[in-house]
Image (tube, rainbow, N blue to C red; front, side, top):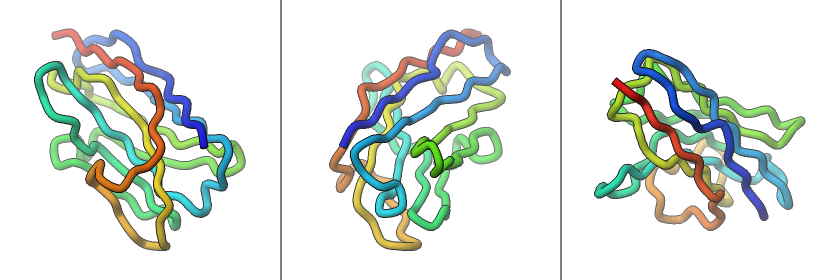
Length: 124
C-alpha cells in the first residue's frame, strides 16, 4: 500500500488549494481515507475523512470551507480547501485504513498506511 500526497504550497489567506492523495497497491473500495494535519508544536488532528461508501467527516473548524472527494477510477482522494486561514498552516497527511461501509474514522488511531505529507502555508 502506498499513498502519495501532493498539492501543498504557499497561499495567501482567503485563497484555495487542492490536495491529492494518490493510492496504489489496494482497492479504494475496501478502505477509508483520511486527511490529517500537524502544525508546529501541535498534535496531529483529523481534518476530514471519506468512508468506503462516500460518507464524509469534517473537523468543525473546516466545515463549509473544505471538501473531500474521491475519484475511484484514479484511486485518488482530493481535499479542496477554500477560504484558507493562517491557522490552516500545517503539514497535511493522507492515510488509509481497512474499513466497513458507513464507518467514519476521524481519529488517527487505526490508520495503517500514511503518505509522506505535504506542506500548506497560509500567509496573512
